[in-house]
Image (cartoon, rainbow, N blue to C red; front, top):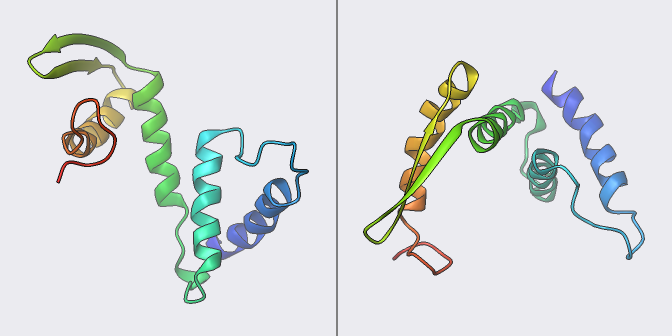
Length: 121
């Protein structure tokens, strides 16, 4: 099933992005679609990709969780020494996504110094 989806999705995505006039946007307009497009593009560029083993459902679930945590919780921000603290709350699907996403992403955010792009070394 995955290889059938991929073989349909890859040409469809190429048609939407690669053949646009130069005056048109080149990044897909919806963030999750753009992320999946980028994954497919990277896999297509890798001659060792075994499409029978590709699982686009996993990043899709992750992107759904990211969307849920970004758009649906109640968020309360407050200043703390050296930065900010944001408390996010929700219920149901939103709470489940918060529990999956916040611990891993908080660790990733901690790698970035305040006011400077890029991870801390």
